[in-house]
Length: 144
Image (cartoon, rainbow, N blue to C red; front, side, top):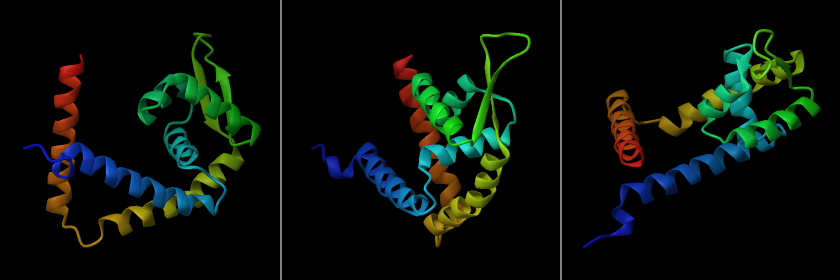
């Protein structure tokens, strides 16, 4: 008989919520949200990133990314410019203030990651990631 408590989807959803809530609490002290932190991370990793690509990396709708970029521009964390060759493309860069915040918050993210995986072997972590990626691929195949 089906038991929701034993369902991988339920277990991963519960784990994700708890991890996200805990990370949000850590970031709250800096006045930054998890979504802003992710955007700072990805934009800083690829200067001049295309806004649409950012939405794909963050797994967020383009309209949500546009609103996030509006807020981050108002906070002087990023700037958006039209691509010189294709005006339909919007490129995003961090401002010096955004770069400074990213550098300040990266250690916080790294420390949280290490805390979350403490006492879990690299072998188990590798298997866990592989299994999750396989599950995502299985579901993606069914939804194509």
